[in-house]
Length: 400
Ligand SMILES: *Cc1c(COP(=O)(O)O)cnc(C)c1O
Image: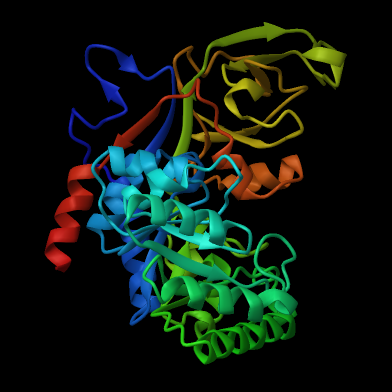
């Protein structure tokens, strides 16, 4: 993190001392990552994917910084997320792609939110447009192999025909065709990406043969944006990389000139001397090898720290230790391997972030999951503290 933090944006303040717990969100890093991806992707546009509260980083704040840094689109899963962006005053083009029969399509049309369509949604959306006398903006989604939503290739012709029929009287406007990749994060599976890309191009050609004229063809997520320039097309949908996380196993964000945005921090809540063979936490899954001090870290699985992250790294006051024993709901312990009280209660603790150099992916490895899940699940009990917002804006101004 930048050494320069103003008092208004610092995670500490003179009157309150260090925040008890915080996910510190560095907006200078976020803006840097958006600029990095813009330079990689251009002339393709960048959609900043801010679903799931911007992967746990704070949706509204991150969307503002991403747009200031040059993202021209915002992407979310749910219409309800897109509506929150509009309520916050963000008028940037926004796409939502995961709907249910309860999705408020009418509200989306009123607010000019673009809608991903895989099949059944098309007529429901056209019905809302008819009622409101306002055309709905639609991106048709083809399943190029992922097997989740997306129109199966066998039904694509019929979907395009129906879309053309609804576009003629002006009920909808098909502005985009898109798909989502399944294996772009595994570079050795390039042939499967090739196959998906070919299916995508075929689908666009078929849409055009129906008289549709989608301006925006988009396929790439973060791994494809970084590894497969041939998938950039008209726009990339950039999620995890924007938060400074690498989607590739065994390759860190620095390989791609990306900077981690979130630091998960707290302070040491206790430091006590215990004898050898002391059982530690539920189940006594850890026992001290010698007389030692145990440090108490006041973050647990209620805060999103995975219970399964045995022996994950923890930085305390300049040194890296390991989780010792079961992670509980509110806390876990760390064997400090010394009998001396070298570390005071209140000392800074970081689970991951640039200060410690620990990556969210190290916690993910310890827990048997991926870095996406580590940051996205940081709990509501942990305040997000946004820093370097002014620096991010200034940097954006200078680039314009
Ligand atoms: C979440 C999501 C993305 C972003 O993926 P990253 O790997 O985080 O970049 C892109 N497209 C769709 C459809 C998604 O659901």
